[in-house]
Amino acid sequence: MKIYNTLSKRKEEFVPIEEGKVRMYVCGPTVYNLIHIGNARPMIVFDTVRRYMEHKGYQVNYVSNFTDVDDKIIKKAAEEGVDASVISARYIEECKKDMAALNVRPATTHPLATNEIDGMLEMIGTLIQKEYAYPAEDGTVYFRTRRFPEYGKLSHKNLDDLQGGSRSLLVSGEEQKEDSLDFVLWKPKKEGEPYWESPWCKGRPGWHIECSVMSRKYLGEQIDIHAGGEDLVFPHHENEIAQSEAANGKNFANYWMHNAFLNIDNRKMSKSAGNFFTVRDISEKYDLQVLRFFMLSAHYRSPLNFSADLMEAAKNGYERIVTGVSNLDYLAQNVGRSEADEQEKALLVQAEAFITRFDEAMDDDFNTADAISVIFELVKFANTNTGENSSREFAGKLAEEIVRLSDICGLLVRKQAQILDEEIENLIEERKQARKAKDFARADAIRSELLEKGIVLEDTREGVKWKRI
Ligand code: AMP
Ligand code: ZN
Image (cartoon, rainbow, N blue to C red; front, top):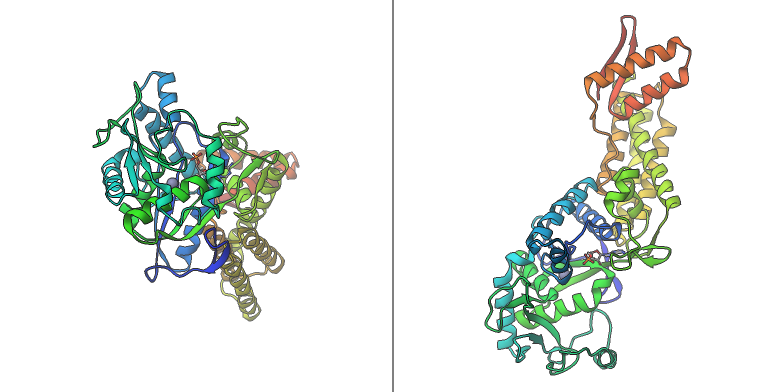
């Protein structure tokens, strides 16, 4: 399996630290609002990476934080006249609902920054002791960037170029820094802000230190994969590397993965620019599986432009798989012959090639775009080779294969029966009336609608019988 590593700027063979195990950390959202679909991109992409790793037999320890103390959360809390923790708790809950609807599995651990302050104080203390950090007069603690010579290795930036850039950006209050490149580890509280006691001042942590601390606590000093959106490469991940490697004296993460942006009109979708759709907005118009399908139809390192047309195309693509599976499920329940014959057995062997090709696409830095094309081809193969004369075994095995590959992408393609008995009876009655009125199109539409919900109709001499599949 090859992974593109931002650190080396090339695809590298994945070799885990511990055989059969993956330690993976994904930077999570700052919770002061409903998540937008740009935030959903890393969630979907890295959930798919996790699922694929598990499919390959790895045990994945997947940690993703919620940043629950931050200027924007504090601002929102002030606007509503509530405590910052009320805002973060509300949006963590909402975020978890969106994740579930996107079929993003909960992380092994979802740490909250505010529960990990002790660890942060401890790491900052170590950094001061090792002279990688220093407290300024007002109690702000800064990281001494130039003391970490490898600074810039992830973003491929040169310290002197950075210096030039940051000097012009010098803002007031920063004069107390030894060097303009130094960044904040701990900052004094302002009036009305949440704060914690520390040896330096009453205050709160900088953003970067939280991930270094939570990653170490839940995954150890060295991890396999650290991931997030590409806007995090600099300064967030660069600073995390500096903090972790200076404090622990060890290489931090072996593979750094970054997803490209979800754009709208070719500009990054972001809360601050106001050009965003929340996941909730999209859920009003589409099944969120369509959004997941849309995200995975591009490679994660390619920018993806959001548009109504592309969402419609994603809807059609997703539905093609769902319909393929429904048809196979119908055959698997209803055709006369139970066991596969010789010809079908040969076709099943042929179908294994799709699985190999799916894995090849995913092994190549998680090329979900190609992997989904392989699923389409398998659906087409199934459509072409099945019919009323198929065996239940053949149709069933093909259905399972499509469902299994889709599931590795986290795509739910088999509709769960969510329909109540009473609704089914009503639809059956409506279908009977439609047939009486010779409205066969409507009658057929009702049959398909029920099938999509996992309900199969059987016309018998005693009337229509139905069963759930
Ligand atoms: P934030 O809440 O802004 O810290 O973002 C949470 C995660 O979403 C980070 O991994 C960001 O890199 C990612 N992200 C934010 N906006 C976008 C976007 N438009 N496209 C892709 N990823 C994004
Ligand atoms: Zn982070």
